[in-house]
Structure formats: C-alpha cells, structure tokens
Image (cartoon, rainbow over the protein chains, first blue to last red):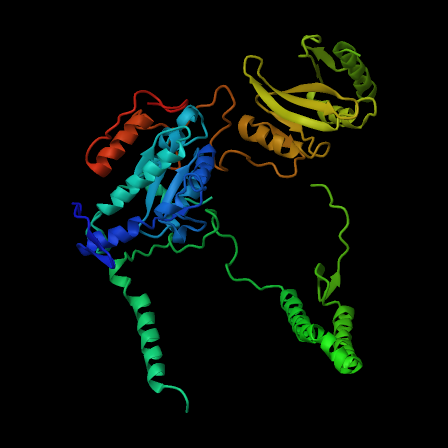
Length: 184
Length: 143
Length: 200
C-alpha cells in the first residue's frame, strides 16, 4: 500500500501553502532531509566523497553526511565488503535508528563485483543488511549515485509513514538473522 | 519596577510550550523500537571496549584556569594601552605606568608560583602517588 | 658488478657467516635468481643479510610464501633491498607442509611482523618467537588457510552464504530496484556495461 498523493503546493506572491494527507506532508519533509552515514570501504567511497563535493553537490538535495549512525537515515555501502567488515557493517546498521534505508553502491556492494571469486569478499551487501536501492557501476558516477539517492527519495515519498510508525507495516526480511549476535 | 510583567509571562509561556512541543510533538510521528543492539555504545562499528564515561585528567582544568586568569589580565591591560597616549599628554603617564606595572607584577607572582609547582607541565608520568615531568626521548622501536 | 657477480658475492658472504654456502637457484642474468638456505638457519641468514657490512640489506620489501603440495613443502620467500649498496636479493627457504614452522625474523626487520602474520593467516606457517602471531586479513575464527592449494571454501561464514543464491548481475538488481520503487522499469535501459567492472 503506498500513498501516491503528493501534497498540493500552491505558491502565491506572498508565500504559499501545501495541502495533503499527513503522510504525504511528513514524507515531503523527510525525503528532503535524508542524512547519510559517513561510511565507505573502497573506491566507491571516493566517488561518494566527490558526490558530496561542490561539483555534484549532494547537499542541495538535503543529503548531509553524519559520522554517527544515530543521526543517519541512509547507509550507503560504498565499496567492497569483506567478511571482517561485514560484522562491523551489521553493527552500524543495527545502531541506526528507524527510519533507515540502505543503498548498495557499486558492483562490489551489489554482487561482490570484480572480487566475486575471492574467499574474503562478501558476495553483495544484501547478504548482510536489507538493501533498498542498488546502483550499478564500478564506480558509479556521482550523477548515478544522485539518481540512486533520488530513488530512495521516491521510495520515502511512497511510504505509508504513519502506518509504519504504528507498527502495521511488516519489516523487510532480514537476510542475516545471525548478524544480531555477531561479535568479534 | 520598570519592566512589563506581561512580557515575562509571554516569554515563559512560549518557551514552556516550545519545550513541550519539541519533546512531545514528535512522539506520535516517529517509530519507537528500542533494541539492545540499537542502544549499544557506538564505537565505529566495533564492540565497545571500556565504559563511555571516564575521568578526565585534571591538568585540563588547571591549564584552563590559568588561561582564564591571564586572559582577563590582558583584557584589563588593553584599554589602558589604548588610551596611554592621552594619559601621557595629561601628565598621568607615570602614574598609569606604575599602576599597570604593579598589577602585572602581582599576577606575575602568581604565574611564577604556578610554574614552580609544576602545574604548567603537560606531559607527566603517572607513577604511584607522584606526577613528575617526563623527558620525551627518541621513540623505541616496536617489540 | 653485474647481477651474477653480486649474487656470488652475497653467497660467499653468507657462507662465511653461516658456515655453509646457501644454494643458488634460478637464472642469474634474468634477474630471477635467489639464494636458498635451510629452514634451521633462516634467522641466522636473515640477520647476516642485514648486519654484514658487505651485504647490508636493511629493507625487507616483502616476506611471503608459496604452497608447493607436489613437493610437500611451503616455500618462504624474502625480497630484500640494500639502500647502502643499491642492490636487491631474494632469500628463500622451505618448510614441510605437515609441520610448517619457521623462526620469526621480526627481530631483524620490524616490517616482518605483519608479513609473518599474513604468512600465518593465509598459509598456516607458524612463526616461532613472533611477538603477536594472529590473523591479519581474515576474521579470527576463519576456517583454514586460503592460499593453500587444497583449501576448500566453506558454504557459510557465521551464517553469511559464501555464494550468491542466484547469480544476479548488477544490471538485474538495478532493474529490480526501479520496479520496486517506481512500479515501472527504468525508462532508459542500459545497453551493455557502462564502465569496466560493471556486470550487466
């Protein structure tokens, strides 16, 4: 079930107003303020940094990086994921507060990438955490990453937010249930 | 009384409602799903080692205290320095100079005291019961 | 002096220090030659290589190993360089595969500390006298030593499957994303991979 009605925004010469369901208004506010966790493992992290840079300014969409998972909404898996790192990523994901979204950026986070034959590489981020958006590329250009984050925005726009808050929407299936007790 | 009690009441009401609003308005609009793993201490993804609360070394306090004293001293000397030319023209130059000299001398005594006590040394050794200054020699190679 | 002369000079110097000449292997003029010492004299040979003024190999470029199951041994290779004399040397030794133990040279070159941890991690060579021998690259509870030729990849590691269930390409995953988010496939399907490494 998705809320497809966007708020109707009327702009007049002395200001304007928006009319819509509470869901659509809250989602409108949320989608323009998706803060991502400052996290990256490999080359895709360089492109992530460039996307936050002045040329492809991610800040204009409201995507600000935060160093702590408590204040982050989006976890961008930027780079190769090794088994050793998988434990940390899982812990970071668990420490993020809802609502949280995961973006698999680049080939390595999608399927293991060019290290698919390696013994130490996890064959895709969706084996560890539930992924919302996959962005192909090696690495994806900043414009491709922005498109992926805009897809997250569109997903946020369609979410039945208040139903989610009241617990009436089921969580996506957890790909790694043992991850909850993973410690090293 | 020269101030408006009504304005004070307004202030109190607005700030009170703002506080309540900030705390309570979000509650029905956000999810509340506490879990043990979510509230665990953040340590860059690693399992947390040691408690999050620890004792600060009190040398920070001592240095900050000394700094504040001498910062205020400088702030009190600067206005005199700014108008010193005029004071000299008025004939009170020697008096101002002597006063400032005595002021700085009093605080200099304090500085010498703090220095001699060893409160200004930053690198210290934590031996049992004694905090002495440490000589930083060449770094030893890894074992 | 050319490489062959350098090598024989190094051989002589080491022979003087160890009491027996290390074996010369490989093709000298191809730059591929090495000196091989028995495993029991490994640490002495490395120390001599560093400390003898004629040799002076103070830089350990790399310390690694090769699994040779057909010979039943694991070869340990050290690539050395001397800044003083501007020349390189390759020292080799080999240990039996069943009981791969070797003296640690972390006391000779501090860089060997982590290189030997990698030897332990990936080949299972136990270094005697190493200050902190534990896995370097793989998780602590990883089964086995992956660079051995007979190592089998487990199906799961702590519940994470080591192979993807369906061999999905990144392009398919992106298409799934578009359908899931927008309800319709992407308007501009990509024709082939857009950059090297993208599997589409």
